Length: 302
Image 1 (cartoon, rainbow, N blue to C red):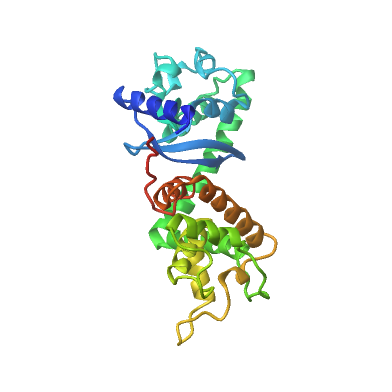
Image 2: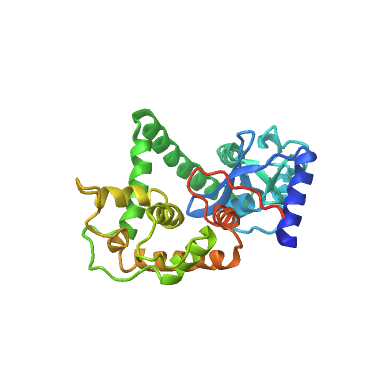
């Protein structure tokens, strides 16, 4: 491991010992036309990064929300969670990729917006607060649309179809509907390095390759290039009754997305092959750099 990798692991362990929860999933949620970072913590809480909550409401990520809550006319409507405390103190501290981060629960955004909407309804807003209430309304309406869509998807089971369609759209960018003419895609070095790491003579006396080479190729390339890619290839390029495929998998890759992605991946794999001294070491590097979907990433230990 590099010194940076060791430092990141040490920081992560220190935060863990301090009782700070870790983020297990990351992403960006689009609210009111703005994309803000979000995460799910190991205890199940959904959080958004603190400074982006400020930016979402005010359009400016600098500074905190405290000054907006300090106005006396707003005080009766401040959410109970934030009443009488600094918003920094009310923030959730969590670990994200070895760094300490601060955020608020997703539901806090709704409560903060409701504060301005209630104050507007009571007609107590100051002129410089009116735009904040207007922004809060946009955010709440945006969340309401997202919420009802998610509820309907969950109630009808469409969320599974939605996820499959999103994956299918990705695979369609990589794969052709009809195969292309054969062209060499795997450099000889790819197999030469594979043979070296396995301790095999290259080339074999008869020029053929062990049957397991195809299994290794699927594992190293197609299973790691995109989620579900190998399964889709096997569906579009099935085996004949004799147990052979009429075409090579790479003949189904699209020219604009699939071929460049395949070439880049193959050369990245060859780079790790050249760096490795054994097959086991190489596979540890692969599992770290290009894990398969659902695979637990191993720690690299000197």
